[in-house]
Length: 111
Length: 95
Image (cartoon, rainbow over all chains, first blue to last red; front, side):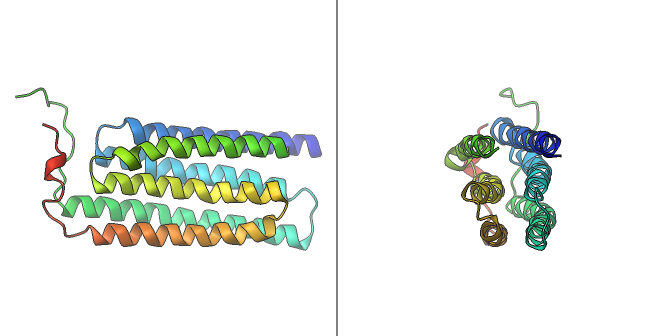
């Protein structure tokens, strides 16, 4: 029980950290403001889901009413982040559009 | 398992420093806002990991939830504040 549960938890955490790494690299490397929001909005949400799932499974090592309540609170964090992160991303995009920020095009070779 | 959690916390701090590049050198204000949002969503996980390291996760889960709310409110408020500022970004087009 304990060893397999630890392996599952480690797999979830490493997967979540990999997604966060992809999001960070995308935020650094993308050429444009709008395209930078793409990894920032999606990969952070899924990374949060994966890492919190791993931590909540680790929290259920010995099952009592307190640990079950804490795990439910952790999934409440996931639920809130999955609501809030797309809303924040959409608000930032809306601010950029209203400020007249132009998007990136490929032909920029000094016309 | 606790040592693995501390390695995970160190990795998350490294990724937060990677996102800090966009906060420091972002061409526009909204780029900095993207970096702040990414760092905040990593900080929620980092708070949970710190709770497991101190074995007080029943307290730190509330702190993480409150921090998530505050981060969301801060990003929404900043994005709405820069809503109607036309011409603020014209110098950022490097063409």
